[in-house]
Structure formats: C-alpha cells, structure tokens
Amino acid sequence: MRLSEGVEWALHSCVVLASAPEGVSLPAGRLAEYHELPAAYLAKHLQALSRAGIVEPVPGRRGGYRLAQDPKDIKVSQIVSAIEGTGPAFVCTEVRQKGPAAPAPSGLRQACLIARVMWQAEQAWLQELNNWALADLAFAPGSEAYAKTRRWLLASKERTAPRPPPDGRSER
Image (tube, rainbow, N blue to C red; front, side, top):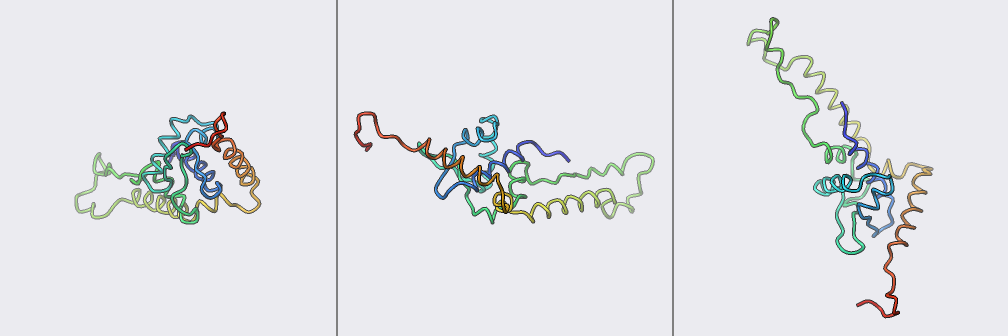
C-alpha cells in the first residue's frame, strides 16, 4: 500500500497547528513555508482536512487555519481518511471466478482467503492508526521539535501582528 505524500503533509501540518498557542491560526502559505511545501497543493489538503472537521478556516486579514478539535480527540486515522478517503484499500473483484480453477457457484458462499487476509490486515492497520492521537505526535515528551515549532510560531505571530499606520493614527 502506498499513501500519497499529502498524508505526510497533512499530519505534519496538523502537528504544527497543535503546537500553536491558543487563538493563533496560520495561513496555508505559512504552513507550507514551514516544511518547504508547495502552497497550492497544501491548501488543497487543508481544505480536505476542513471538510473532515479536523481544521477550521479562520477568515480575515490575520486568518488561516487552526485545529477544529482538541489534539487529544483527533486520531491519526481521521487525518489519513480526510486525505485518502474512506474507501477500502483492497477491493475484491472475485477474480477467482475466472479461469480454469474457478469454483462451482456453491463454492462462492464466503469471501476467499485472500480477501479475508487483506481485509484483516487493513483493519489491523486502521486500528493502529486509531491508537494514536494528534496530541501523541505533537507533544511527545522531551520533543525538541515541539520547542522549535513553538518558537517559530511565536516569531510568526510577531511578524504577522498588525502594525500601526505610518502616520501614527489608530485603525478603525
């Protein structure tokens, strides 16, 4: 099985958003900049995450994206499903019904062993992804990446803070 690179991008972007201070949102372009990703493609993945209720768009000049749920409540499987879809990885086409070894119709009462093995493997994989929450990835004990991400986010917040107009008047 091969997952698209969008899954990796989405997972890392969600980790960055989980590290953000309360009330901070990040534009898609800033998230893309963090990992040097193509902004337009990352924006498509962020839209998929938004449709799945994992992130939410924040409108306005200082808008962007933020997590829509507590990182403890977002399972890795949800992020993967938002990007890859929820359909099965393996689809049995009953190829066994063709060729010289095709069983009699009475022998087709249950799925073949190949299909059962593939479905069991997929269920085990999904269960493992369900065992991990975004918080487990973002707040790993002693994570140097978390500390660096927090510093970057705080620096980003300062860079995007509204500046007073050049004539000294306040904005309305």
